[in-house]
Image (cartoon, rainbow over all chains, first blue to last red; front, side, top):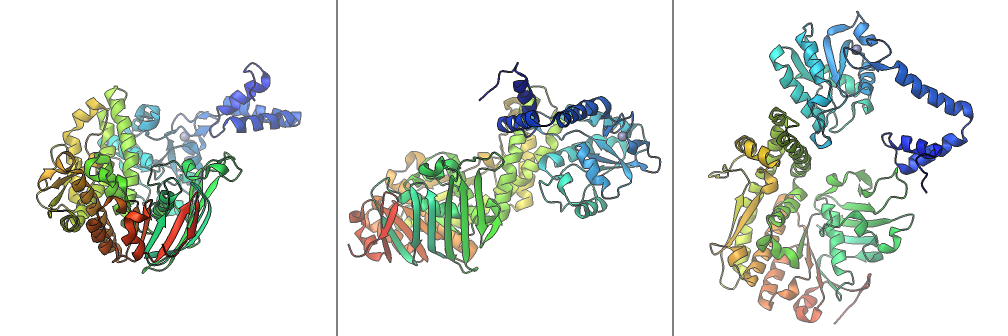
Length: 199
Length: 389
Ligand SMILES: [Zn+2]
């Protein structure tokens, strides 16, 4: 069964299908769920989406999600601004936060993945180099996932930062290969962070 | 080791089969397309967790249930081993009704769920088929597969390196194409070169070592099986872009270093071609009979003897590496041998705890029939025991 794209239901299904992890059948299920849902519930969802797009943007320094110019980590004077933890995505920031980490972040928004056509230009790498070049940064912790692509990105960053004499470290080995940072338990992640080694 | 119980549910043309097997030789007699090869494929799949016929998971599930709500094939065996008894269960999901479930294989070792790759080689097996002549006369891919299936049964590190290598190779080839097209820079290659050399070097080291171990066995059995005591030579031909001359055995770090150097040497060529041209995915080994390349100059009979010798050598290699006998599977290969060669093969296989043989032509292999400790007849996906003639 398919709906013409100009039909309101068809349009909704089309839009839902663009979301990650949503196939055609799930898109239909969600669309019909919303159709049956009480008016306030559907409107609350629509408003939340509009709100997030209007109010949330990326921090001008570290590219974590924020409501202002800068995120709360970059603004926090009590945090160690000379210690930068580089992660793949904003979700990883929340995972690292749970370990009690007191430095700041840099969110790449992806990893090097030639198969998917992701090269250095698609990531926030030039911005990281610029941050380091301006000085004041003592150590960069590469906290990309322990996947092949995460390792590739960590090694690439190490080379990029070589000329600046900044120390580049990597989460300790022993994380389950292919694990996602935001799925690791806090104790494991804390150990990996504390046991970080020079790259 | 030997299998004493085997159950199949909805695998290929078998709806339901429960077999009790003995040590020694079990013979399965049946016309073509009744399910003899499917039976050996099932046992080999329990060993390698891969189809010996490169079939997709859906092909392995019996057609009648493929459209049902439970399109699942189940294979189960119990094995007596010197390393402790084994119960191995494999469920193959042919098609998913619910998209949140994954098609593929689920494996349990002694009741505990395992990743398929961790279950490879729990049951060790060697499969002889009439297509084995391809190892001698066919494409390099068939020789690589021969080595890979053999080594990965006994060497977990080798299997892991193969899996990692496949992923690195894919990424590296994409990157080479992007560099070729001006969308990426050559400096991005450094990490992938190191990774490729690392897992590739482990594979090359494993292959060189395994070949060194099988050569004496293969030579010996070629002499015994051939008419004029023909000499069989096997020489590893690693794909190292001009650096393949290896005069003394290299250790693992030396193979890694050599492959890394090869990658640096061929970098311009690889960027031009947009693909990786050195590494174990391009390896081969030369097979020579009496000093001549076996594919071009060997007779059909010589090629067949060489292929048999390689399979026997594989069984010997597994026995040595495991300190236990692999289960030997012969899919209709005995009927194409003359009585003398057949006797030669059977004498060697008698030293293994369990040999499972299929034939379409029991009259041609009466000598096998008399040796068998268990005899079965296979008709249209059912198996029954028979005694006497
Ligand atoms: Zn920030």
